[in-house]
Length: 225
Image (cartoon, rainbow, N blue to C red; front, side, top):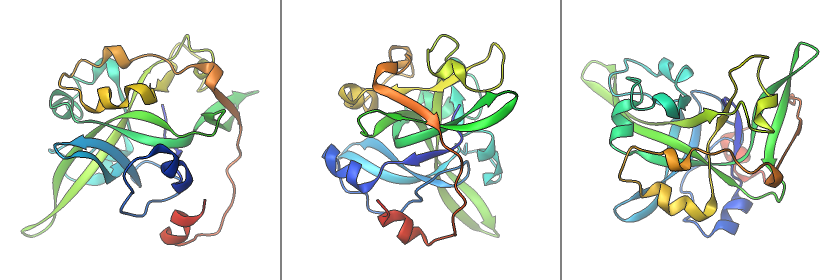
């Protein structure tokens, strides 16, 4: 599972040849904060600023996002929070520079970062939704939200080392650059051909303690490369 990550930087974006991102976003994301999502519309590739944590159409408020920031590929068509979006093939990607997981050393959780060795951005499979929440009498707020799709990682050489000891190990699903258009163009909710662990030889991980930083404006975060 992934609850904390760094989205792509502007330097990484320029190297991809993708459309410019027309909004600001934080340089570190947690559940119920915002992140950039890339998806494919009838007119081509588009960016949206989404809430990290999918908010289904029946939700009464945003608090559900604290429980829906990851969704299991095995139950994506069964869980009420995700099934409608999955059947409608609302698949996108969240481009990531680095994501963080907990590794337990002598019983204590340490924050470790996972990233590509070559410094390139990588695409995490995502499911997105557009909902309307009542925010007052006769007032509605349109919310765009997304969840990262996960897979079993008990046999993955890197991801099996994270989380508490036990038989349950999870990993985000990384969409290879060469299959990005295929993923974004899916017309079926069957995503099994994409459910595979990322190649360990292309990634690295290390201890990354959380830094204590002063609060800065979103604009400063956006341009801090």
